[in-house]
Image (cartoon, rainbow, N blue to C red):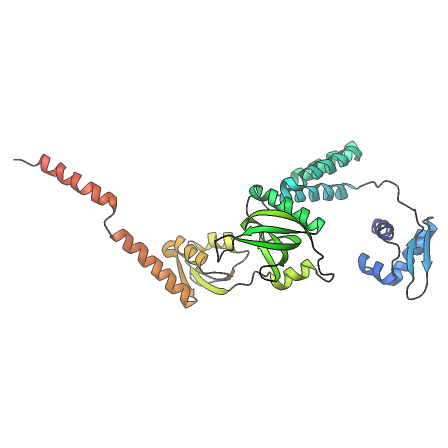
Length: 340
């Protein structure tokens, strides 16, 4: 019965959100059948909800204009979702929405009964959201704020940007369509007038952002989620295979088992297979394991690890500055102690 009540409430809220809904649309939103939609409509009418039904290809269901639900009463789970959602926004956006988060949670505190507020507080203590971003975006919060304003006002923006491949900064004029948070990093998606094409810019590589007076109109069919799914993929450029000795295998499995494909060997060692964008990190990781790891594939990885290891050995075979400084001192000490 609770599930039906929740769906009825959700249906009323959906009907309030726009003027008319088709049965198929409501069914898709609520994940129920069209037959169930009609049954729920009958239940709402019996409850006294003023519904209007229009038949035909352009018809559907709607609420009587002006009807609004009374103030909502939240369950503990619903209130927890709102608090946690507010904390998530604060974690990701930082100061940009800090004031709004504070105001929203204060309003919740004001309307929740004492016993419910205590229950929610207990849940918030045991359900924590933190560490969402890879970087501390404090230095870029002003940039994010400017970009958000440009997107909302549909104003062009100039950015000073440097890519990983080209560290020198280049000024670009962009029609900013959206800000996206993916893989722990912030990205700006927009039309770059320098490249005359859609581009994605990492926010932490934007030196400054300046709002322009010029306005733009984004394409009507642009969908940022679809664009990111089709164009901004973390496709691995290399498939690496590394063998890990038995004594180090448990630690590697614990640290990297969530993203590496690991196969146990009869002697207790394991073979790790994983994709990487570049081999630089893999070379450093294999070397950090010392003699307990061996790169097996691709041949380029094996060659680079061997070259790096030979370079390390060669460096330690050469006389160091400390050896040079200590040599004469040792000789003097020996001469001084020898009999004359």
